[in-house]
Image (cartoon, rainbow, N blue to C red):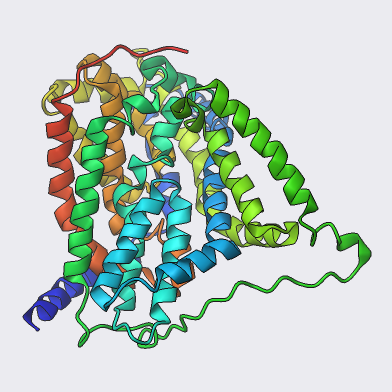
Length: 472
């Protein structure tokens, strides 16, 4: 019973922090817009002309359109696959496995983290539906809030170390990378980022520790609040497919088009994976999204069901669509606008980092910086566009392994997700909860993850040797 009291004390403290953030922190778009203004003012403080800042703002605004759409399709593809009838049936089967409430919370955490390595959008929706399925079991005394926080661990702990890591994807795809960054880093393949053995060690450590914390902090049967106590009806039914009402709709309700499209897609994918190394093929973001969309179409079987799922998924991409153009402007302001000394803001920041950082302290400094900035600008790929010009220049100047520099960003950038409600929105929509219901539990994860991640980033970084950038 003492453990339950201690857990409640931790939760109350975290909830107070969450309430403060929810009351005083505006929408994340406001942070991005403020960042644009601050960077523009900083360029003018260096002696740049206001017209130069205005030109960079407009020129950079649409510079990330290809990457913006790619990230939006990561979310859509994950949602469509997770909400397909076969996936829902699989979720119901997975929900039968846990034997008690605490093991159910840990089970959700494991499934969520594994799914996030494939697709972070899939992880949120799949994990949320699994929580609802477990909540329907009357024999489990499972805390619905703790299980919801466990479903968020995929995005809050390990997603950036998997295939949907936007920073790693961006660095592996020169066509999506802004020239200002490409000229510094060159192309960094997955073999130098997420497929390093050091990345595997970091990933395994985070999964094990996250599972232990999820199990230990889950309230016992006497204090657990189930879905009903949270005011939630855990039942979930896929929206029924509307019957065909006129002859022109028959193709929407027939699997014919789906079969033909998937056959064409299968032919293309076979060619891609047979003519390229598997790692090279899957690291193409377009290939990755194409695979998930075609899989979603196949799992939904009929075009009407597929299109309905896409319609439900699109609202979850709002943050990506409206914020990434601002990140493109920030990158342009930082890397193209020059002051009276003919140097850019990115150059001055990188020079500052070089002065205070060494090869041995780079991992710690960059990790802390990325984690703090991630709370205010919660966007993996968009924030990387802002940071990369100077943090990667510093890595180059210090002869630090560039692939591990990307992984430092990936692991540290995920930390603030544990208490930042920005990425929780799709999951909260599935669960019917508020951010404050989850953050009390995820905050405990943050307290343990932060020192662990920073230590491993430093220690594992010492085992790597610098290699020169590979230009396309």
